[in-house]
Length: 295
Length: 168
Image (cartoon, rainbow over all chains, first blue to last red; front, side, top):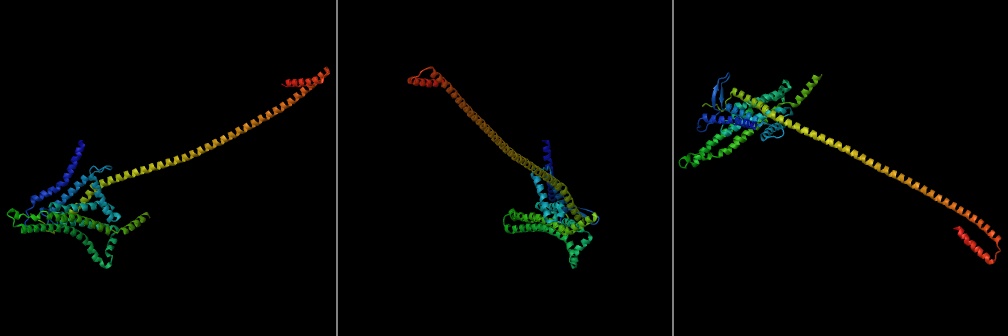
């Protein structure tokens, strides 16, 4: 009995650890955010700056929030995979298995069989991106609307693409740019454009969602003032139109757009990594090499 | 409080976010994928084991069935053989009994016939002997007495009566 209680206690701690970071950043925001005056579209607020060699490192909302997301996902992973059993799966085990199977299915459908171990990477992209974007539901700064965050992911994807293109050797890699020989410069540009377009697509979508939300909220306040300003006293100042309407739009701009961009980023990652990898050449080369080794 | 510009590139931010993604990848690989895959593999192994057991049981049952079918067919053959054997034995025995009875009956009939012939012979011999005796007695009587016709008649009658008595 005491063991069971202890078990429940650990579950409780893990769930608390999953929720606590979000609560913490909400409190931090409430404590530090100055009252907004009119329409302001600006980047992440800087908490403090650390001097660093090349460039000073400002610790902003984006950093704190992504760290919070990281801790949340970590705690959720621990919570979901606790007390797994083969015969009697609990609800959370079902959820964990569902996540794993869905991500594996996605990888299986969109990538070469060579990349069958890409599931965790795709799952982490999906999780990090979706959770980060969904932070805007709480009125927090979504880290994905900071170009540096998404840019870091895109650069990692670019490194992966190049790494897998290099699997067949540098000559093959160089050759892949000269597919139609005259278009080599364009090929190089498109190669470099891949991470930039990925980063800007994701960043732009989330940021534009926030911008539209701000514009809409301000616009609705003005409209409310215009239409209902004749009401006496306090009622005339209260922006009635801001009740409900932004929430409905937030379903699109925050939930749908955030989830969709996460999915698109993951899909593009799979497409580019798998598409850049010359699977047939690689198989041919490996069989040739193994034959040579045998001889 | 200061804010960043809406587009502001900072190398350290990029590096930190890249490291965050790698860290999350490691976390998910170690703390989500590894345990889930382990459980899935265990479940798969269990299912495979169950299937294998079921297959083996089925194979065993099939073998048993074949064995029993074979046994049943041989048993039927044995029973048929036994019945045929018994029938032929019974036929044989019955035939023998009948033939024995026939020979016995023939012997009895023959013996009876022989006995009857012997009896007839004996009877003939007896009659002959009687006739000799009667004739000798008749002759004796003829010699002893003078006979009238009536006497003669009476004599013959008495003789025949006596013959009848003697024949008894």
